[in-house]
Image (cartoon, rainbow over all chains, first blue to last red; front, side, top):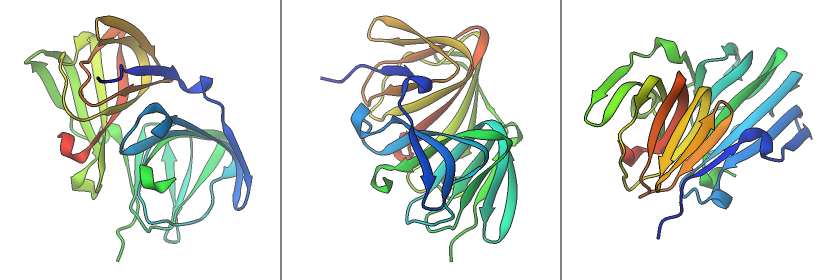
Length: 117
Length: 117
């Protein structure tokens, strides 16, 4: 009674453009979530253009991130930590965080628990 | 009382080399798991050299995968599905699956629930 495995390309997924409310020039794509049958956690793809950023915020769920392309900065607890392709980032629940793109933009995967939508 | 965010590079993580017991030429790195404070799910990095493969198996937990580099095949339910850089793969719990590298090898992120170790 299992569903078969599902394969797709991230570029086939319609992005949500996030501009405003503390964010700038962010494209978000939900790759694997409840609509694909994921029971526990959600894989999203983010692309932030040069000069863009995600909101400076915190929330009661964690982020597990892997940087795919480009470079940028993670702002956390008063620090600005360089991040680049090949890096992983763990943001614990409750931690303030903001992802900022470098001059070439940045792309990353970010996984959250399903209750973190 | 929160821990700060954690940043590292996947190449700094010592790989587990998996060769035998149905696998060939697989390098596995646990990037974000219990040792890093992850409470719910585990992010791993896999590199499979050309001609290599993961075991042909199933288990009662899901995989959420993103292909980073190269190409290969997902074997599932009698099919051999091409996968390449930029693709995502959702393998539901209980589904038979095997990842096989193409001629250039393949690298991917694979996220599992923490009870799937």
